[in-house]
Length: 204
Image (cartoon, rainbow, N blue to C red; front, side, top):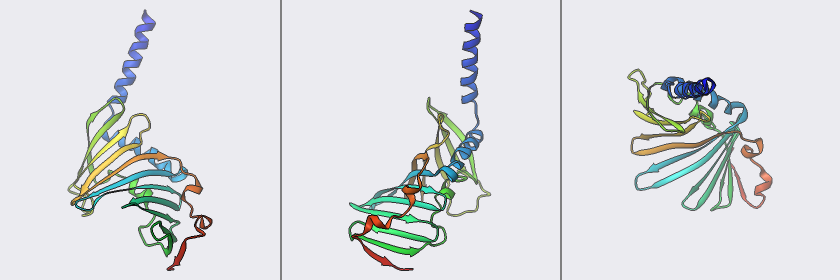
């Protein structure tokens, strides 16, 4: 009987310890998991809902200096590869690949996820069996005009990866979901042999 009580006590203590974490502790652990994407690769889905125009989403993958994004816009498939020096953009409607020099800020998917809550006060609002729900309010000391005033962050208790980050920038609703760690080099590298029949427009 004593062993039974000790076992139950240990289970309760473990569950309490997991649920007693603060928002900052959860985010610190989340940041460590996201950092693994720098060497193993990171993938996520970004969606934007724009009034009148509609909703668009892109599946984004990155590994080192390479990245890949795939979107469907009004039935048109858009694929973009980048290696920080060059961008390759394929448009299915015109069956065309446009090659251009990368601009500053391109291929910054890792930076988008790094320090998601820097400049914000994080508060643990609630938790479910599988997730923590955190509210992020912009600090007065955060003078970045592009940062939204509030963000809602959901973190997985199992993986400590973000489940969803949602916010509103002016009239546009933005969300990032389906975070995964692990991307192969082939997934993010442009392969010209796959577009032998496409029109190639080189603007470099």
